[in-house]
Amino acid sequence: MSPCMAHFSIGDVVRHKRYSFRGVIFDVDPVFANSEEWWLSIPPDLRPTKDQPYYHLYAENEETTYVAYVSEQNLLSDEDGGPCRHPQIKEMFGAFGDGHYEIRDARFAN
Image 1 (tube, one colour):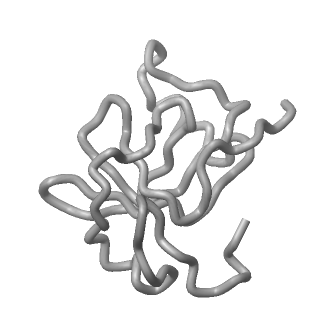
Image 2: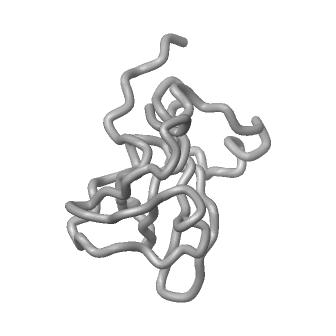
């Protein structure tokens, strides 16, 4: 597998194409880097390919906040434009504007 260039960057606010959640990207894997068990738990007709970027998100829906791992093919830029409420965002990110959070520490920039 050769890695693809990531379309999204750390700090971007994105939305899932199928499911009702959005989040802030805090890490990017150039290809799938989770467990085989996790990947196989996805229904075959919805299972994404492994040879694309996967994103770690500080995610949120109407009810709760959590961490999600999502393939690039399942993400869109968030058109909402507003900040996210996940409590861990403030640990890594500072100012929010134009659908993107500024990274507090340059070591995390991609």
